[in-house]
Image (cartoon, rainbow over all chains, first blue to last red; front, side):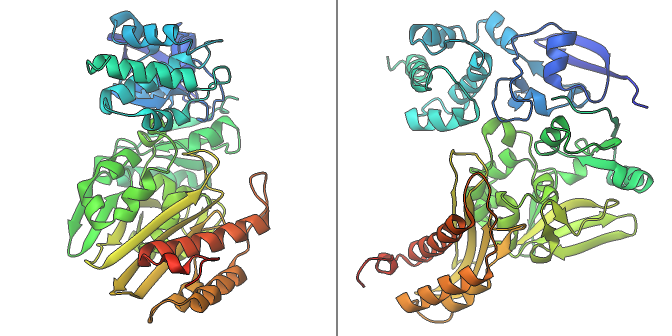
Length: 160
Length: 293
């Protein structure tokens, strides 16, 4: 009844082709077909933000996008951002500020944080907090995460 | 949870989508941005046999203004609404409301057409549509029809759309120079569904409302255009007029109880929102309850 469908897309700069079931979401495709397990799966209905990835430059919930919808898209995961060094300062700030404990939310948190740092580099604490409100963290109480993002924003703007 | 199995078809045009919907009827679901449909699929609240993905249909995208009408294509994403200078100029209520719709990662995918067709009674955009006197443009194989937003929503997740039709656009009369708007919602966390919310649009001549449309949401099975606003138009609002309007509002509300709020809490919050709206739009802090005039 439901046939495999061919898809072709770019993931972290590499061309990828696969045959997938229509019901497969992008998060499971990344994790199970490509072994890119940095994209975490939490709630599977768009609430927790652990699966946040970039598709064609925009952050999205990978659990709310079918792999077949990503046909011809350019997908960037936490592995891509990490390996390229794009967020090395942000990662260091997370470490310095103890902005993670169990680490489950961290990949999604980093994706969302990098998004606000890119689009609203002047954001203050309140704006950072609001921007990250779609990402759940059950360990830190968020304060240290906001610290880390704010510190990175200041450092990037030369306002250390 | 994982979605149950379904087939998937990528529609290449509106006509192509309508053919697929005609063929599969209520076995098919239209996939737009998927930000409400995908959760429903993953939770298996919805188990369609076929998804018709309209995401690639370019003609459903974009915002235009002509002859006093702002037309927003169904596939216009929330983030596009948020950034549109045409919408900020001609329907600023939408610009203000959209910031309350979920979170950035969801606004990057969710669409205005999807939100209106999904018709969640707690969501912001259906209430904005009724407050703005918008028209929902629906296409079927026999042609296009226009439905006033005030009639479009019929119940929880229910609208006048038939399974064989596609919502293609929403049209909003452009704001007049003396148009005013108000938006506020009570929610536990920014981006959550509202406990109670109000999207309002009006016309103000000096200190008198000549028109006031109050679209309440999360107060019943669909967004509600409050008839109680008739107590607030035509002459300068007094404390007793506002009290009459709040009583009339209470009479027409039929809120439900859920884990977020009791029915009586929703009634209270709706009355508060009405007051807050009037006080804000008229700059009349003297009308706040408990304050001396």
